[in-house]
Length: 220
Image 1 (cartoon, one colour):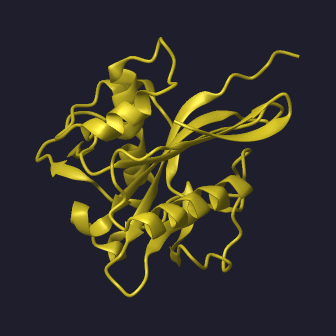
Image 2: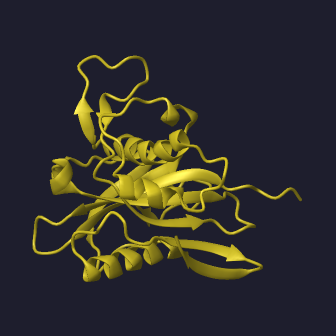
């Protein structure tokens, strides 16, 4: 059997800290999905070829970009790394209707109706789907605070890809069913926030992966 190579993907933990607690936006994957149907996840998806070509309003913070490049592979160009961040912003828009960036009056073709602003994205974690799964992804997880990006939490709208959107307390997510890796990423976020509520851009980033059947957590 031919081994399935993981494909690049990106996901975004959109955080609302305007109330008395910190909440994260999640939605239920449709039952039509082959990979992880009917569970609650963060907005996200695979990197598209066009993500390299989309113009942006502002680039990634230099420290976030440096962390993203660690152990990314010799063939991982700057444009591919930038495309991962663009993919996170694009997927957030496609799945929840939330745009992060500079609005465009007359977007061309299938382009986004805004120029993505990557400058406030923190690189939180990376996870590679184990071998043997029906789909494999090499996913980079980013965080974004709604108040920093000027986002109204009430503006999130469900889509055919991500249903039943909910803002969930990051320290009490028992109200929804999440995949194990989603729970692990949330636990990572909890630890980071307990260390520093500002989520510094240059902090070490965990990589979750498997080697010889063992599940590992390395730091990038």
